Image 1 (cartoon, rainbow, N blue to C red):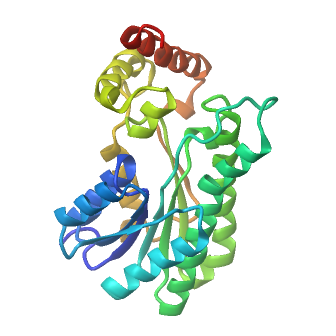
Image 2 (cartoon, rainbow, N blue to C red):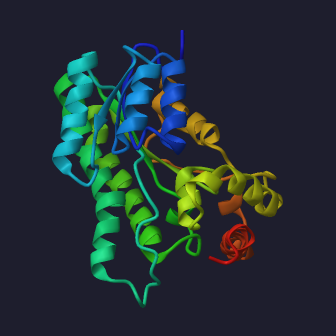
Length: 282
């Protein structure tokens, strides 16, 4: 019996990176999964890989009604809901605090915070309707617990994700609903490559480059990969964490436990160096 045998989950941003790693692990552990994303070709391919275990739904997570439809699809297809993983995201606005346009800030907030609010709302309504309780996991970041890891908009909105989680504890705990957050560190995903302006066809090579450049600076000695993060999500989704509620769990190889200011600077420089090496500075 898998650790999620008989469970039904929703995963947003589930066709690549951390989301994909989590969907694969959830299915391996016995769950059925409704996957929400906007990359339809990848979503249909994922559904075809796991017939009768995965259903893909085109889902713009900035649209509250789209998340409602995703949750309802999980229930209609698999009979209930036990888990939601609010994972979808992107780097968002990259401007500094003094230059940021509030339109860009609002767009980033819609993607990284409002979507988490919607996920909590619609999953919790279903959990309460079922009377079964449930578990909610949301992707934050090391940028949610320390400044200097990313842009202003990303840092601010990821901090706000923790506020959603903590409010959920007080409002939903009595219904048997748990809400926790994971805070991934440097994780080799397509979002990481895009954040550094690296083209998709060079993403794999960039992962190796970044690991060699930065891995030795991480206390655990290497960068993370989606499976590393997915294992933490699995713990929080499973009954093994039945008494874990309101936790903000760093999954960063120890980075947030120590002073890493030089690391953030070197991370930025590594992206610049890679692009110059491969594209002549273009």
